[in-house]
Every structure is written in structure tokens, then in C-alpha cells.
Image (cartoon, rainbow, N blue to C red; front, side, top):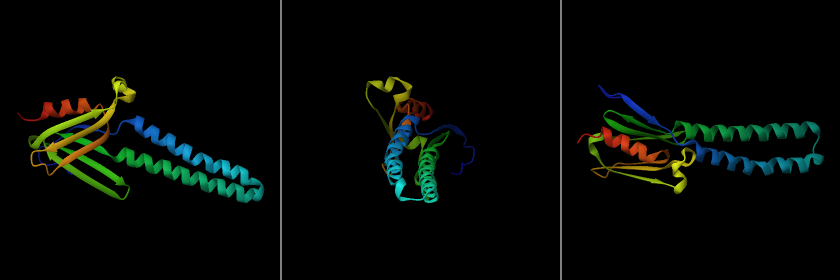
Length: 159
């Protein structure tokens, strides 16, 4: 992401932490049975093999946690004084950038989930921006305070 002449970053939005914590919690419960199966199979292995298998499983789990965290952390919505840039990491090896000029913005749609959105821990949703040409649509899932982002972008948009 390169900035243009006289362009400056005003705000950077990253995903809300609550959905990330849900994903980490689910990952923990998916790998939990692996340790249970290792415990059951302990009698079939020598102590050294049991230790090495445990180390291998822990390394795989740590790699999965780090991978999910990096993909979560690298996604961002950057608002500058000239445009909005969405940096989307599908995988660690696949990054896409979408951008929309502020004066091309046609519509911004936000959605939040339920009454609990009034509390910060649940105040996340989807931020969807469409341009006048309809060629570019930026969709930022799990955005923190999508209404606040929309109001911020509308306050920057030239009239």
C-alpha cells in the first residue's frame, strides 16, 4: 500500500477482537480431543515417543493459533484523506487490496447483530461500501463499530 502525493492516513480499523476470540475458542475445542486420544494411547507408546508426539501436536496447535492470529491482525481498513483502502489477507500467501476514492463513494451499508451491539464487546458487524461505478465494493466483516466507521467516512466525503 503506497500513499499518493499529499495523502495521509487518518485512521486504521482492524477486526473486532470478539469474533477472533470465538475462533480461538473453537480451535481450542477442536484440538482438545487430540490430547485426549494421546492420553488414551499412552500405554501403546514408549515415554520418548509419547513425549515427541505431544511436542509435535503442540507445535501444530501453536502454528494454527499463530496463523489465525496473523490473518486476523493483517486485515485492515485504512482511511486516508483521499481514499479508503481495504487490505484483505485471505491466506498468508494471498493478499488483495481494494480501494475507493472518497468522492466516488455512492453508498455505505452497515449491519450489526442484535440488541447487544450497544455493548463494546458485541459492537461489531459488517461495513459495506459501494462506489458510483459499482465496480468496487469493499466489504469489511467483523468491523468494530460499523456505524462509527460509516459516520467517520461520511464526515470526510466531499459534498
